[in-house]
Length: 290
Image 1 (cartoon, helix red, strand yellow):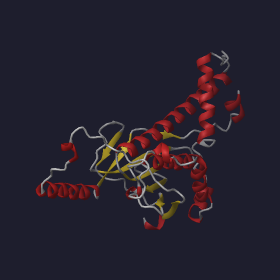
Image 2 (tube, rainbow, N blue to C red):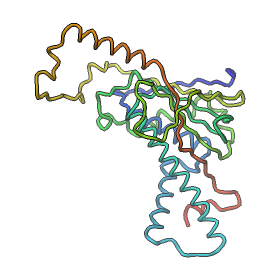
Image 3 (cartoon, rainbow, N blue to C red):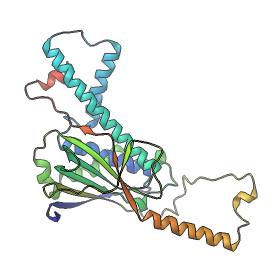
Image 4 (cartoon, rainbow, N blue to C red):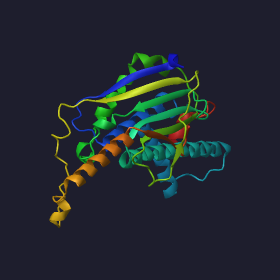
């Protein structure tokens, strides 16, 4: 099994503050990148979304022509499949945002295959959760799209992935599994199913591990640009009257939380992305432009 494992490092350079929201957007960028590179969508996601949304706008405004030909029926059938794929990608991206926003994500895994038991390819993203600051706002430290694209372009020239990306992969299903630190359970959204045992990959599966690395010259304690300043109505809320026993109890609670954060649990998203590709007997230009 180890012979198929490939480890790839993705360095998040020149990023002063790494927030949970920025990390989620970077992970979504990797999802979009993999969907296009593994030929599950015909264009990069931004372009794919533009075309599908354009169809939806035309349908709402009544601009679509009322034709009853068989060619028109086939085109509408393919467009319905394309819309379903776009919606599932959008839903999966939102699940990733929610997971990073409400929980501590240790790693994620994208499985390409008919099911989670026999995937053809697996991409595991290892998150630098200790480097993620929750004292800063994502909007103030958003990752520029160009910075994300620059990091993703390195994957195209990565020797470990060059051969894999050069091979053809038929349209298939894409599953999402998330490893969460169990001190915070995602009970606020019900689109994750707990997995009591993590998926065991078959020997034939291409097993890729992407390690996100974040290095900053400034420590998190030095960066207080977004630090929330609480306004207290009562001096008692400042906890200035804590006794030594209370302080010791607080330290014990912190130790327990730290120990709990070292354990983790796997969850599987209910959303499944089904790859879309126009059939070979149909002109692709007619599907996207007509």
